[in-house]
Image (cartoon, rainbow, N blue to C red; front, side, top):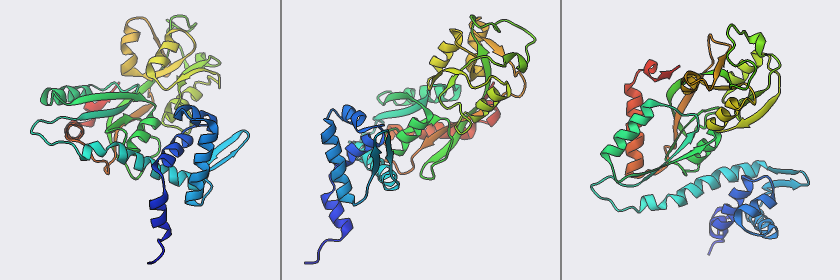
Amino acid sequence: MDAPSRPDRMMRDLDWNLLRSFVVLAQSKSVTEAAHKLRLTQPSVSAALKRLEDRVGKRLIDRKPGHFQLTQAGEVLYREAMDIQGSILRLSTLMRDMTDEVTGHVRVSLASHVVCPLFDAVLAEHHAGHPRATLNIDVRSSSEAVDSVSGRLSSFAICLVNRRDPKLEYRRLYREFFGLFCGPPHPLFGRRGLTRADLAGHSAVSFDTDRLQDALKPVAVMRAEADMGELVVGTSSHLEEVRRMIIAGLGIGPLPLHVAKRDVDDGLMWQLPPYDQPPAIDVHVVWNPKATLNRAEQSLLDRLLARIEATPMEERTYR
């Protein structure tokens, strides 16, 4: 009998538990952190990593004091392991019992600043048509939302997009515009006739993605043009917490204009310059075309995409 080829041998010998441990390691900053997440001892996690490296014949993580980073081989294995993990988690979808009534669970990953009447209307229609279908909405950072779709952990995501993954599909849901705001304790609150120069030197609060190389680059540019400097005293990936810090007076912060309008009308926030040509940010629906969706998931996604197609862009632009 011929000796098994290397791919056959790897398929036979590779243990999914090793891959699962590796996924957690790749998402951690150290073996200690991964061990805590896995509820295992540090030596057990280190031994699992060593066994996996022996199986694949490659070093997967460069690890030394103060340094913990995936190698090129580790990056490749992580992407494939995420795909395998998603397939395993969705086995129940493939084995579901088919009935005339649409049932099933939908898991949507949502960036926290998504305020979109169109999406709300689609949710209402979906529930009215399929009352036994269930829904879970996970609020995540945009990058985490995209990762959850890549790993087939979410039915689809609604979030900002920085770099497009060729394995995923994208559709623009709406466009929003950002402005700068301060809260009642701030010295600029209530002042009229302000210019960008008045913002110089004031501290800021913002989103984690408010960086020149990230999804909110136009917002970072707006801050830079106001000469506010580099003093960012608070950040969060959740809009609600950025709003909290603005209202508390920690600093000047960016928010979508249509989201902040109620707080401005209620006297909880004050809009600051620039008032003209605010930066535009597009929010997308992201889904994995290779994912096997249950009927509830497919119905909601199809309904959302159809509504986007039928709604002119100007009606999906919020100021």
